[in-house]
Length: 274
Image 1 (cartoon, rainbow, N blue to C red):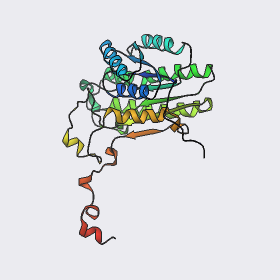
Image 2: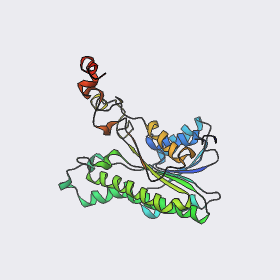
Image 3: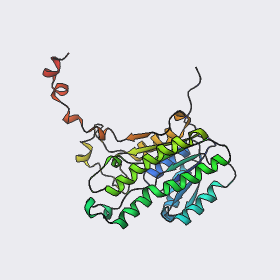
Image 4: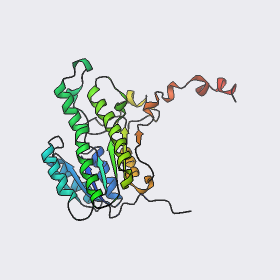
């Protein structure tokens, strides 16, 4: 039997779009650094840069951070070209930027087209741009690689989030299409769909009423999502492509421990089935 593929990414060059800010992006960056990857990170906030460099230094690593707003296509494309045309191929890509502001929530009938376009730009359009450039650079050098795009369980539909849900559903569909087209070049494309996660934007509190509706009885941590991204980027997942891995503690199952049927929770009833 051959040796089990490793999670070790020593020497692999990786790019994380949105790899700072203290939430999922930072967790992904730190997970890849711990696995030995050589990392470039794109973020829009210089303050994020200083915080991230300090966190990476604690792990004994280093990271090149580039400032760009993914919704400003010319600015973003210029930074991507700078990263991807340097010596040595970037073979791992994680697209983490996304989300909505509280002002973006609305009933579908009231959703403004300007807001809809802004949400798609931040959650879907830039992913196409980065994936196109990443894949083209690999194909030119006949190198293989792996992409992970961050989706959301909201891709299944969610009240007040029509634009965000549509963007993430589009991201998952686009990821599958890329996987189908680029597999022949050795490029894998997958997505990770988080449930509710404790991040600076979403809040750090346990939100007991939310946690009780999740089978694992807690909200996710950024590290839970980062672990899934690391797995899909690594050789442990070398025969996985075109998939969406849901990481939500079981929230999308629609049941929690305290809502299980009596046949499971009531010993007297359960005994009749033993």
